[in-house]
Length: 332
Ligand code: G3I
Image (cartoon, rainbow, N blue to C red; front, side, top):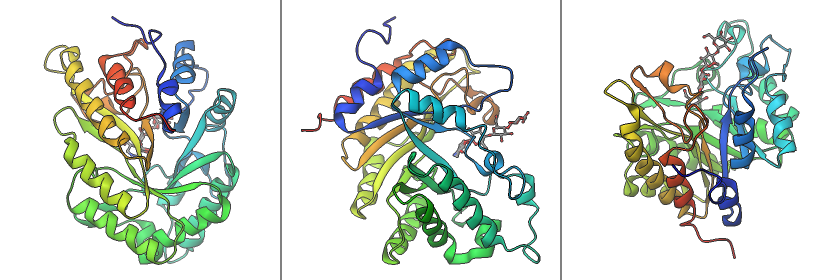
């Protein structure tokens, strides 16, 4: 099996092509440090990091008015030491929020003020350090707007407000809307693009759309589906990032390894399609080792969704991604 030391790393491959290549970093576990290989591979292979959970409201404002950055800070320190950029995830969301936020009462609490103060507090903390923020995540569901506390309180002002609040305290950051299930044509990307167009018409500081890209080996978008979606976003004058890509394989119908070549084909196809667009300038994986992934606990019978196996050995998907990145010409 080839070693990832045979040839350039992902970051060495991506950097001359004006492409960022990143991975989500897991939450620190008190008293249970990750193996040295975790940090070595993260530092060697990726030039960008994003916190899988640590910058979400549940971790950054666990008690009302009390911000806590102790979960995220080890990652930002590591990034600074390894010349990595930090992508921020996520200022506003209906999930990943602390209990006190879930229990807010619209009759008694000024919901918009709570959201504004949260966005300000976190954006300000990482001002100048986070190059791009997922400002708000996943506002559409089941054919229309998702019914959330934030949407009920702010209505059509929700996105304009959160993007403006983010810009006030992160004036240099690129501001993204981020969602899943918008990597193929359908109602959800139509709704997203209509909202993006409305924000741009209102002069809202919006710079890009994040395509999360959580797929199975069977349901990932085809090249033409993904190119269609990216092309429509780019036509609005926006950037595109692939923000959370992972491609899960069945783990309960024989050895998962029998699916690795197909997985490599899917990863390679998606990255090759995306990197053909200069306005798509960052690809982030939702983790990098099958040792740590949200997939097995959320989808029973599925797993092994990442580029390195649980022992930090590169899988066929790793080599397919590296090869796909080389199809983008180096910047002149
Ligand atoms: O930290 C607690 C721990 O103290 C507790 O013992 C344990 C028991 O359940 O839970 C731990 O928190 C879990 C956390 O992940 C860390 O493992 C939460 O319950 C669990 O809900 C949380 O799930 C995360 C999920 O977002 C919700 O925030 C996943 O790790 C994370 O991968 C997932 O990421 C999302 C993106 O933010 C948005 N797009 C979809 C993507 C996948 O769902």
